[in-house]
Image 1: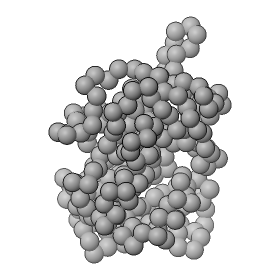
Image 2: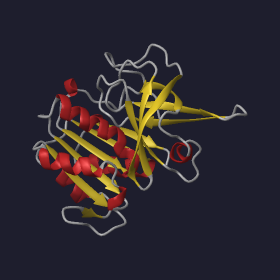
Image 3: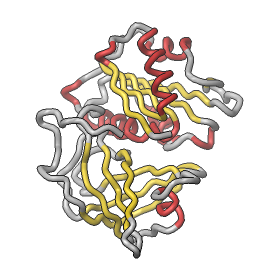
Image 4: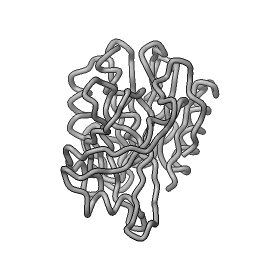
Length: 252
């Protein structure tokens, strides 16, 4: 994950110091993704789209560090929510899924990131394109938009392998049904489409339908490297300006 210089006015600590955060809640979102509500000891807030670094230290001193996007919207709760996918060959995610319990403490630092962010002054319309766990920072943006600027049009294009792999599925469908300014396009790549859902990878037709008649002011694309490359190419081919597209890439 690339770290860039913060934008003026962005909530950033003066010094990214490691600190402990208490695990306050754990929820299963899909068979492979759990969300963790953390309360850092000292937290001055964040901007939707930012991430934090997590560090684990073994008894022999070996350390493993990973970055995870924040799924929750900025608020005054003093907590953040991370949605972490269990990776079979991972070092940090299996620990979260198999070992971490409510009441444990985890080392983190942040918030980090000044490019893949959204706040109300940036406006819209917004086009959000996520693949798999790439949904997580987009969820923070969607939740924040719903809280501070629900009049801003937003469309989420979300690609997952199967229906049961859709992270925050119930919340997304609930928002789609209740929010007249929010559109949801779901693509399932390994399961036949259900009513209203697209079967297959995101393609030019789906991208064109997502863009619709309101050209997005900003487009956010997040997922694996191949997913981001493909989605960004489709967005550019559909005529969206290069400078309006922001991307965030996960390792794979």
